[in-house]
Image (cartoon, rainbow, N blue to C red; front, side, top):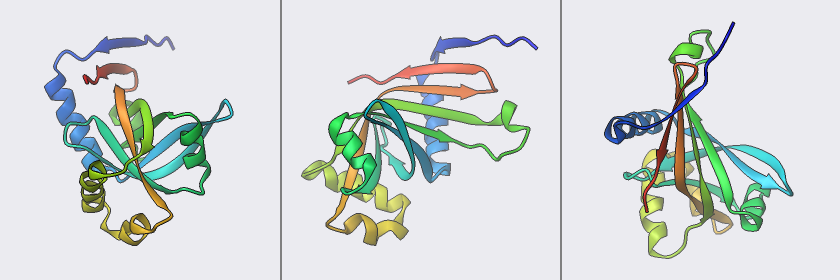
Length: 159
């Protein structure tokens, strides 16, 4: 069986933006990938996206490895997908990798992201309001969108 890998720039950013918003609304969890002394390190995190898709928010306590990893190297990525663990996923599932830089949010910026995060995850209010918890923001530089098993599109975010 031969496979062809094609990566295309997004022809219609509005369409892919709508698809990303729908995916992000339907999914509560993402896989966060950080670096632990050069080794990839992954965690499941609850996330929320900003309306303009430029930021993905997640929360973690400051005593975690993921927080330490981000503090030492802010480069990170998040994987959000809609798989259902069926064979049909090979042709029907969509997976998005967001790459960028993560950091703790503070000041006025935190208020907006906190509101967004708690609107999606009200059950995590006690956790995220804890003094030991940090509300983190992934500033997205690029989205890699994979659908129909091998259809890859790249959406580069503008500053």
